[in-house]
Image (cartoon, rainbow, N blue to C red; front, side, top):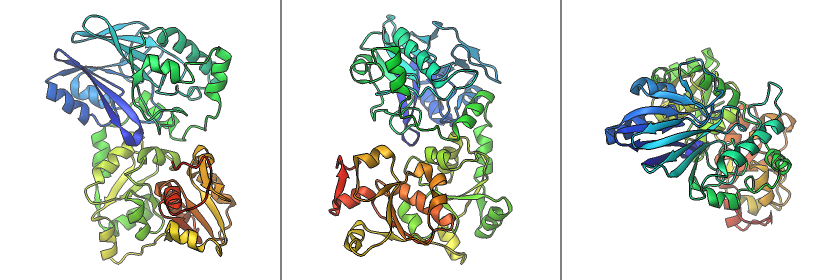
Length: 464
């Protein structure tokens, strides 16, 4: 029995395998609770924790899970860690109850990257846990393990060999279970689907259809955006071993009164991170705070925009969401949460503390006023989204590049900002406010609301 445990906000897939009283977990997130709960339901012993590679986009839960279960941690060939684990040989077989799991060393995304091929009781291959080697619609980016005289072209060449020598020869009906889906920065063209047959991927995945090594290398490296700044820190944490999650929770779940919250923010030069929805944040927020809502791709945006992974953080959230916030921060290595505002923004307001707000206008208001309006329109979406459909005359200012483009903005000139639906433009609004920009309007609902209100769009005119 195989279960995919998918975490949407990280676009990450972990896997639970169970057979005849024994279990294994592949690529676990930092919180071991879901895997422990699943094993308890089956009355199973977790025998192994398999890692496909040193993850860059999240902190693995291998150490906590192994400590609580006695499971053996397994990496593929060439991996080097600062903790005890088993470095498997290429082709080595592990038994989980009546099932067998074979290690396939597939360097390319990283040098230690490995896939795991699961066969049933009869020895028939059924599932390939492909990590970041093969995604649905894409392959892993080959630029994260550069160094030691290796270029991204070198790594892409290794990846071509791995796919053609180890994966493509497998039966077409093998189910591919990757480590990520659409939304992850570990690839550039991932599907929203989280599994598929190898046969269908051979027909549809551009990387598997490449007819030569040279073509593959060119296509895989084309259009790669720079990796998010937190990636290198997460790799280091996964190699060395991160702090126990319980200790991170103990520190982060300190309930602070408004006065103590304010004092800690000043004393520690802490970032105030508000995780409420864009609609709630727009109405009232603590001056200088940054909004990254839990309902979106929270952890990746934290990693993209908060460049110092050791930055002290204070949390504002809806009451009851404190633990969820600290856990999600810990998944990407942001372990220095100092506490949260007890009672949320309502407690702050009752204490008579100052608040700020965002000038948010409707799409209809923007269109009604457009004949007489002045100021640029800044579209916060990714370049590919912008090319697909956009307002005539709008400029593309991706949220991911905000630390670069704010330095060139005229603080006196009024401008409008929007994204696809409001999540990213509110993040941008909060950052702009914190940096002293006040003369702008955010368009509620983004390009979707503008299209519904009758705005004229250029490009491939289908809302994203």
